[in-house]
Image 1 (cartoon, rainbow, N blue to C red):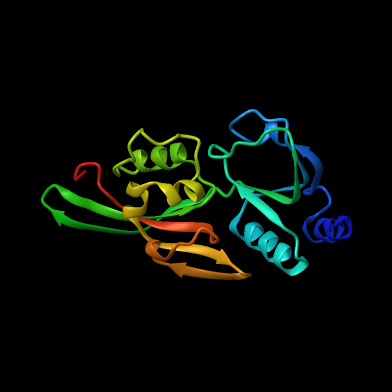
Image 2: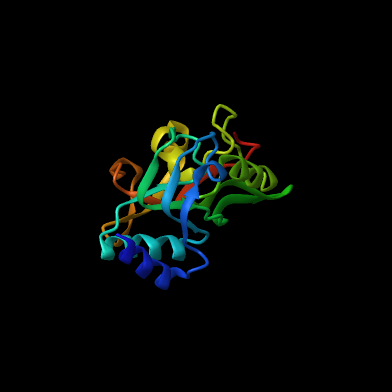
Length: 195
């Protein structure tokens, strides 16, 4: 496995791969666990690249965002541990109407990368005058993990981009499988005036 890790470091950059990395600095909960090999992906391109490399080199991997849904004790994780720190959010479309009061946005399509926290998403939505998600969600939890378990987020999802077996697909949320790695999702969000 050590040889495969060296190939990974050559492809991704020796300064980006960490060995025997304590996970207490990367998870929302305290742990004494560590990763034999650790990498932080900060863009979708980096995330796709590292996932493709693990597939090509047959390296087992674990992936998490903020680590709010992970409970580890004091053991070492074999294979590669990937921390998803992708952070892109953008409005990709709006629906509205023009009236004597001006242009009014009724709803917007918002593209959100899987490493974005619910808190960051809600801050963005608030600034844009769009409805935010309720405070029942863990603010630090990321889209990539929350989308699997939160019905309100699933209902807002229009298309989700996933990685599976070195391929990227746009799928409907109902097609999402536990083995899919979420890269991003497109959410339909109503104006906060219409919420």
